[in-house]
Amino acid sequence: MPTEPATPTLADVIAALDALWPRERAEAWDAVGLVCGDPAASVRRVLFAVDPVQPVVDEAVRIGADLLVTHHPLYLRGTTTVAPEGPAGFKGRVVHDLIRGGVALHVAHTNADRADPGVSDALAAAVGLRITGPLVPDPDDPAGRRGLGRIGELDAPLTLAEFAELAARGLPETANPLRVAGDPKALVRTAAVCGGSGDGLFAEVTAAGVDVFLTADLRHHPASEARLAGGPALIDAAHWATEWPWCEQAAAQLDEISDRHGWALRTHVSDAVTDPWTAHTSLPVPSSSSGAPR
Image 1 (cartoon, rainbow, N blue to C red):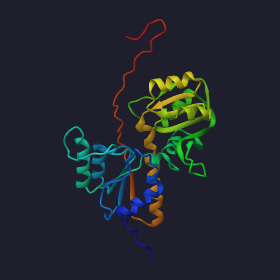
Image 2: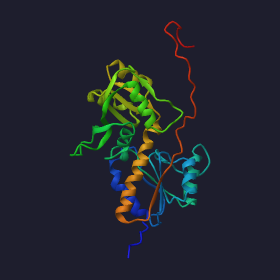
Image 3: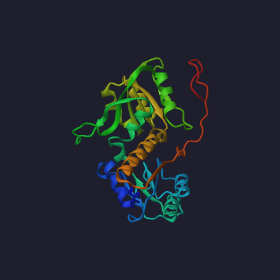
Image 4: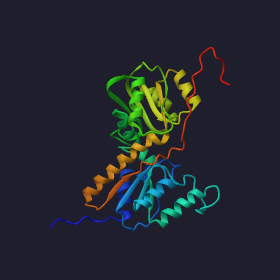
């Protein structure tokens, strides 16, 4: 007779997730791991999302998830209260709703950034890159596969404008259009990518000699100085959009583990757009004779 699928406990699932993204590989300032949930509770349904915010928690409760796995922490800087009131009361409400709904919360942040595969692997795949290695390899990885960011190649050269269009199609849509710095007609053969905020990696990107760097949250001065110093073209996407592909990758990884163990487990990926920006206004680009902006 066929064996009935087993129902794992939260402890079982967390052990599997910790094997994928070991907590000790997170940055010292980070807050990863189990936030709330009973390790002995059964887990049959898992929801993956970028942000542990109210719409995502509502979705987890609505679909009957037993576990919510997010990339971003709920309490990154610690807290002394989870009261659902005051300036951070929205976080307290999240905790109360999670516990009331029987939903555990687990966070994989910078440990998932550095993993193999990690957040930037999913981003590279989403924009059509064949990965050749990490942008900043972990020194304790003899295989040279773990680390921050990824370097990749295109199967055939594209112009910068064409690559930007490819990236726009590959990433989930947000109110923020992709911003591009560089000659639209320049050819792109190689690229570096970093899911999330990546303008702290300009030195490594320049040293890699790639044609373009795709990341999020690029600030004016670092981006301007990198371009003036002869660095690669830049593509700036929404932070949430560069990290959301990881959710699908992570769900597939847990599906494979579930199949291997014979678990009765279903995974879901939230498509709630939790990027904080909700609209943008397009303004005409001033000509060189129009003077300074008002």
